[in-house]
Length: 254
Image 1 (spheres, rainbow, N blue to C red):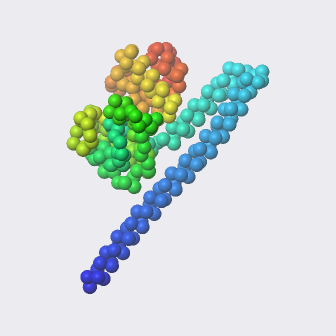
Image 2 (spheres, rainbow, N blue to C red):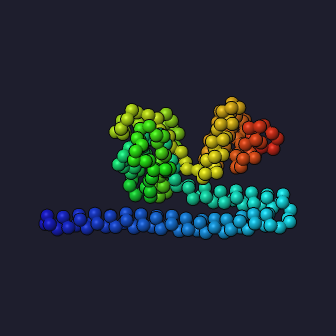
Image 3 (cartoon, rainbow, N blue to C red):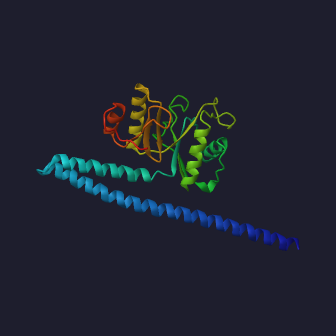
């Protein structure tokens, strides 16, 4: 009887493991399909941009309209690239150590924020940036951000929301080396959007704007709190002057 019960228990656990594996495989397959589709569209747009830029330098055409078309397509390419990052986030200011387990660190970060994170929720986790030279010490160099790709966008959103609620959280009690220090979670932006975000924050600070933030890859700014304060959207470098230069016609979203 005990052996039969043991076999039944093992059979149930095996079935459960098979279901979890199937779910994970289906999720990865769906993500791969979506990435392939987006990459195909980006490739087509990129070819069109190259063609237009070639025309601009080799043919006598209406430069203003062609430049506007190129800018529009580059913006669309950037939007496509940003869509590919909607399940990713960056964790910064976690001290880097030799032979560290990034999977363990991300699990610890999630626990600290009060979010349950299963191992199958994580597709990949890496440090971004140049690999440290063996002759350099980890402690004196600026720590590289940790980039996490999650299986589902809803999990990423839970972590980001928890980080907003627990703003100011530190590594205290997380079992990580070094003194407790504040760490940050942010959604991952494309190179262009990251540049816009940094410039927006700099210009906002210089002009006394209190709120500069990003959501789902879009950058927003608001000068004052309250419902009556306009929320401006920043999509391109030209918007920085329109918004922070207080010129008429600044792009904004209510």
